[in-house]
Image: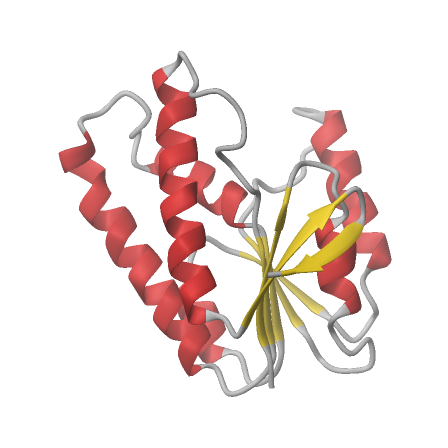
Length: 177
């Protein structure tokens, strides 16, 4: 049993690498917190989601959810979560938090993050979690950018601490940390 956090920049190969860590024959639960694909609303996002789905083996079950901790806890086998950046975005959207006072939503985010970290630690099967690496560039001049980077950095630290291994993808190459 392995619990692995896979991080890296956009288009670094994170998802493909994370998928390669899972047994293609096993009934993997693929938890995805991203927005549902709607080609009429966002054709590029729908194409991206479709490409991800085409790579998944037939034995894998896709679950579109924001309830990552409870879905992970309920899963009876290996789980792949892709990705924490979209999870954070959707949570902040659902709480209308982008311009709100952090005191109104930060406790909820901390609780959700803690529950997910505990679910990762407790899961008796393989867990691979995909996230985006943040903070290697300038601090955003926009509040939303700072809120995202600061909080995804905190989430990544919490989930990384709950995992046995962290792998950074750079230009498609895995670097085990």
